[in-house]
Image (tube, rainbow, N blue to C red; front, side, top):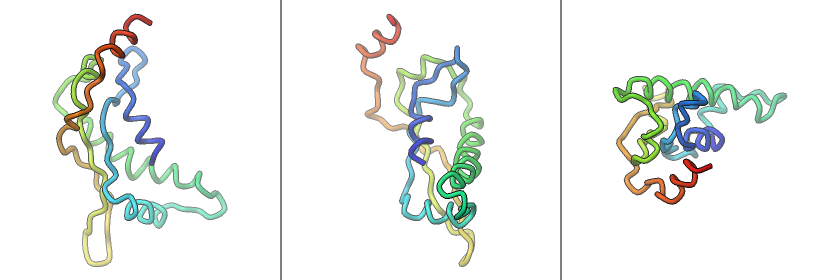
Length: 124
């Protein structure tokens, strides 16, 4: 989950076709999310690598679906805007079934890219 968080936190780079990016992925109560994911796809013989596939399906896949529902065009200039915030949480479907949900919830207001760093990126 941390690798996924880092990947989607990186700036958007449309030339490298590296999007989505520049977003804040918030794992709400990851102590509930991790066991939920492990129950769906952990294979003891494969260890942690078996969790990568389930994280891709259950979180990355759902995040991409929600991201694609956005109405704005993805462009590099969005890196100068506040980060769109997406929550990942476990919700109860019924008394014995729960599911991972990804939802766009607004923006992370204090996450502006410093102007000096933005200019250095342009210069290099």
